Length: 75
Image (tube, rainbow, N blue to C red; front, side):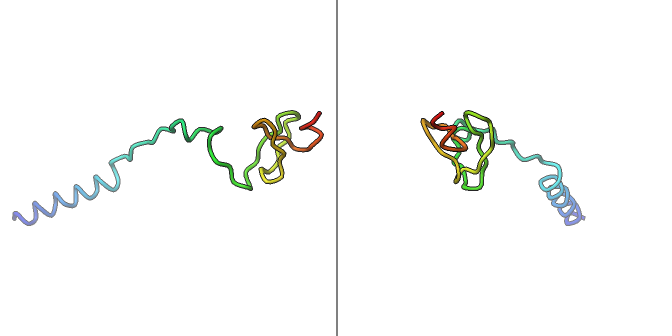
């Protein structure tokens, strides 16, 4: 009788921890904001002048801003 009760408690605990209990939601910290995150080569960024999107590895950078071409960067 006591083993059945212990088994029932274990089953209820397993169901609770796997299906009912919600995992805590992590709030983004200041280091994970969009401006501070490290960009991959395949990520797209917006040109600061014309608004065209270009891959990070093809973009021109000047004064911490991304540009799609040298004309936008210098003009």
